Length: 316
Image (cartoon, rainbow, N blue to C red; front, side, top):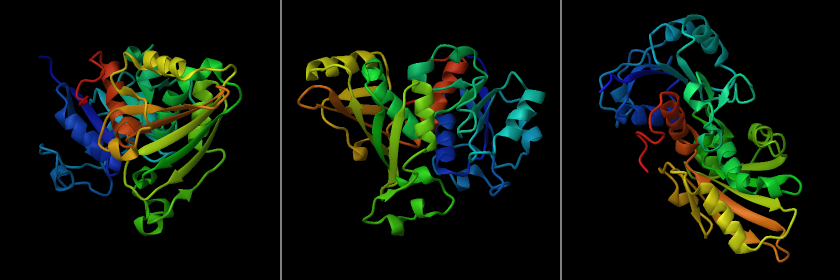
């Protein structure tokens, strides 16, 4: 077997970084080359990642250091607005190295591959600059796309996510005490993922996100007005056909539950409900925001970039 591809991770202290370490450590063709974290530099990964079996220690690499480690790919798991120096360093020192950015910094950049595999496999095998979609944006696009050609007006999406989606920096949106017995609305117009989905579907989307007291998993309820009347069988067939060859998409007649998606790598789409006139469809989609909404999708994109089976290393 060929030697494993070396993958570096920059900014791995958060929830998604932890999932990436676990998935990469178990992958048959990837090896973790370095894990950079300013706060944990010098400490063993195993002290923070119970499921990590190796002997690596965290490092604290700046942009040029990260770009000159001879990695086959570098994953940027940084907050929004912090990726640019690392990308510039990779462009200077290692343009052939795959850069995969988990933030929103390059999701609107036409020079980057937008890595939602179920909708963007074309060009994935040659992509060297890959932008991972947002978690909510992934769920919304996969819920809306099968009916995209038949929409009449903006798609409206009500979203609820666990508080892990707010990251590890303390805020009201990841404070379990403030979230207890609560549902916290935020960014009710103009949310980044609203703009992201509108851009990549080329259709207006109106998104209303909320944070709930659970830790992981999200649900979106999409309200879709249609140009012509549909019947339930035609709708179900449309989604079954759209998802038939997708290993990480599952269609259910009943509305999927967030409690059933936590820790899973796929998306569930269901709950198809039509108005009496057949011209309004409500669809529910769930996914784990840390996995298919981030780390699992990153692994799909890396597999595709290196010509490996898309779901290699992903339990299905």
